[in-house]
Every structure is written in C-alpha cells, then in structure tokens.
Length: 441
Image: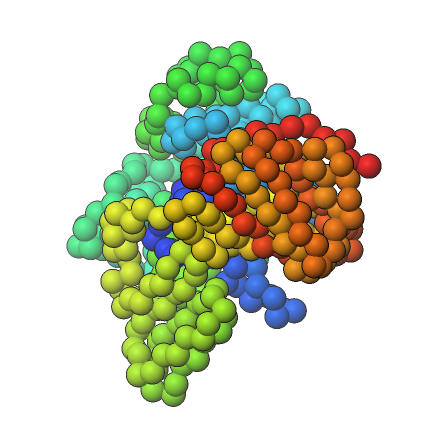
C-alpha cells in the first residue's frame, strides 16, 4: 500500500501547545502501553506500520515541519516538501509526482491520500487498504472513504451517495451545511467527507499536467511558487463523473479543537496537575515545571506551555483562533531533527534558551553575524567544533563563540546533551544564521 499523509497547518486552535512551528499533530498527549506519550503523527505512523509493515509512506509537508517529523518518526520516512503553501491539489500533485519520478512507482499503482491528524483505530487502516484495492481493481477514477455521521455536524462537507451500499457511486458533494440541512443529508444516507481518497498515480499526474505546465517532479518543484492555489476538491473531485465512495462506520475523530482532542485523552491530567473530586469533564495538559491545581471545574480545559496558558470552557475553545491570531510572540518551544529547545528568557539584548540534543545528533555547523553565544553544558557528554577546532564537552564546560564564529555541538552516541545557550546582541533573529558543510569523523 502506498500512502500520502497530508501534514499541514499551524494548529492555532490548539494553542498554547501548538504554534507557527509546532503544529497540532506533534503534540504528545496519547498514552502508550509503556506509559510514555506519543503525538498524532507518531500514532498514525505506528498504526500504519502495524497493519502494513511494507507500506510506502510519504508525508507531504512544509519546510517548517521537517525537523519535527524527523525528530518524532525518524529519518526513514519519505517527505514531499512543499516549497510554499499552494493548497491541497498542488501538494497532492507534487507528492504524486515524487512517488512516480523519485520513488519509481508505476502509473497503474494505487495511492491513498489522508490527513495525518485524525484519531483512529486499527479498523481505519484496514479500511485504507480496502480503499487502495478499490482504486486498484475498480472502475472508478477516484475512490473516497465516507465517514458514517454520528450527528448532523455543521463543520464537515457531505458526500451524497447513489445508495446505501458499502460501495456506491457518488451523486454530488455538499459544502458545510446548517444543522437542519445536515440532518436532511443524513436521512438521505449522506456521509461526512473526511478528505480521504485513493486513485491510480497516472490519473492524478494527467490531471496535474492539464492544470499545470511542468515536465517532471524536479520541474514542478522549481515552478511550485507560481502554480495556481486550488483545492483537490475544486480541481478534481467536483468535476470527476466517475467517483465511488466506500462507507466507513468505525472510530474516527477530527482532532481539530481542544473539545474533540480531550475526548480522546485516556486520563484527565497530563503533566504536573491535580483536579479535586468536585471537578467534572475537566482536563489539564501542562508542559511547564510548575503545578496546576483545578478545583470545582466543570467542562473546562486547562493547557499550559512556554507559549502561554489557556483556561476555557470546552465548547468555547472551538472559537480560539481569532484571539490567537492577534497575539504576536517569540516562539518559545520547538522540536528540531537534532532535539528541542525552550526559550527561558527574552530581553532587549539577550535571549536564554534550554537546548536538548538527542544522542548521536548535532546542530548544523553555522555562524551568526549579529550576536555572540555562550554555551553552558549542564548534562551529558559530546564534543564541540568551533572554527574547525574540536574539543570534548561535558557538564560544567563553558564555550564562548563571538559573532561570525563557526560552531556546532555533537552529542555522544549514548548520551543526550543539555545546555543553556545565552545569545547576546542587539538584533537577535532566527534569520541571522549561515550554514556550512562539515564532515564529521
């Protein structure tokens, strides 16, 4: 089975645990059997591998998410990088071209496209395999998975099928309706459109060539910024006469808001938090090193991170986005391919950061023109390279780098490194960074 996972968006509806560089699918809130936590993308990837260990998985995403993807699911997953945002059809066309031209997958083979962030169980992935088989062996050009509605939702589009058979021809699509209209759709056997579909690779490549002028994957990548912004629904689905829909009535939840996300949590508190016995339907998710106490709360979500603190009625939490859009703040936490960082303090001429490097990983070899840096190693062992000079590093060491100095730090294979980085300068910016090649021994 070939799968394209669509991983996009900033997830502002899950502020403060999500931000411009940490989307909702990277928040670790799902408890595993060993007691540790995993994110939506980790859970999705693990479940795919459980059902089909040989599946070809490609994540279509932006540059800002690559570090987090590598951090959470490793280096083996294929990534189709979007140079910029151009909506779902260009993203899917680029990923399909990547499968054909880079991964060398034939035009007659089927591929399944689905979002990376729903909460699902094993039966969903068995259904994905069935959907792939339907696209591979059926006569329809496009095969959709329609979700059996559980209530007349106003936040989903609807698929109107020809009949109530397990697989049916699609008659039409309907945009997000009001509740009364949604109830009428459901009475007719309509299904939620969860954005899950399958096709043969050659079909979408032909559609892409009709709408965009390109030769192959490399050419499309180079022209990507100039292609038309258009959704897959508008470009393909709503114009295609040969579409089949497969009903799915298993577990499926869109984790787009705190209200829906907390429904999937197995325990009311994650992190340093306490709820007294009078609390009802209340959750605490705390990433800070300070305790949070809730008393007498009902239908409340409390979320705390270095980005801020949210205290909200669960229903009201769905309306968070316009308020977050008005906030302008330094990103305080991010996961990188080599580890993570948390901003501890921001002043007019300095910034203090806690940096964690994973075992065997290292930062890019780089320099800054407008700031000096000081590293205070607080745990772990490794080595530093400063202007070509290599030295061992361990807890208690202090390394000073002046502006323009090239530097990196490498954690030993069996030891993470934690350090306090102090940046000193009048114009501290993430854009003030020049990368250099470096061959590590």
